[in-house]
Image: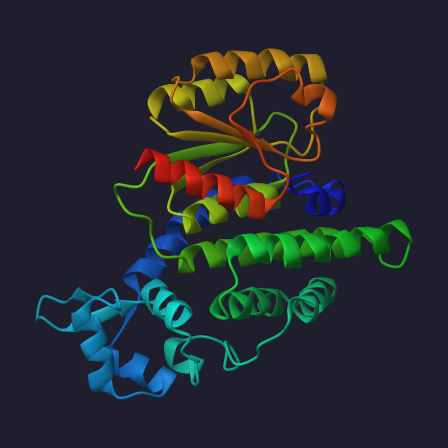
Length: 321
């Protein structure tokens, strides 16, 4: 089911200490990426074209551009990445944009990328973790593909190694921490959703402290045109109900990696579902959502993996718009 591979490793990693950091970092990194801009000249040098070509693309709307008070063109990094992905331009000199010198220059196949990501996690190389994710994103991979085929598979392999005593538990716990940091950085590089985009809220319930699945869902939804907000992890149903009351949303999602008490969960879920507006679609997923529990809860869709989530989210947004 959704996030099975990731959760099998994260089972042993208590990440509640990250939740304040995550929300603080998301806000500040998103603001940094939005405010940090580069000039058409820098973009031209980075991808090996003339400055006049970049300015022409800006004026045509091919590259989203902002203007300074003096009327000069400036481009945010998310806008640069969106243009590169859509137009298949190679990033020849990423250092000009403040990126690692080899970013975007290695077209790894998925299996090779998974191996490099796993190796970086085990080696404690956080920069290497982010580098793999960024390269795959610049190569045109969707966030759902990266999550399912690289992040989840790497953690599945690490979980197997831990179970076979090939690595120590600190390796996977440190890897979880580094992955969280890399995903937060990825979030800051995605194009911001339209202000008219439908709103999605999501969280994990009390006792479920696994950050990686929640961050991945949030990224997938944002990439697919939603104004997604991850409310956090380990939240009681009463708090989720209050969040729904104060914030209108077209989608509410729950990542369920751990359910401590099935009966308590069912009661809380029923109360939450009753509090939602009729038009709010409930999306659920996670290894803890067993078949027996699924038969006793109501939802719009149950997603087996991130690519399935992306399909559901896209169709739902199209129906809403």
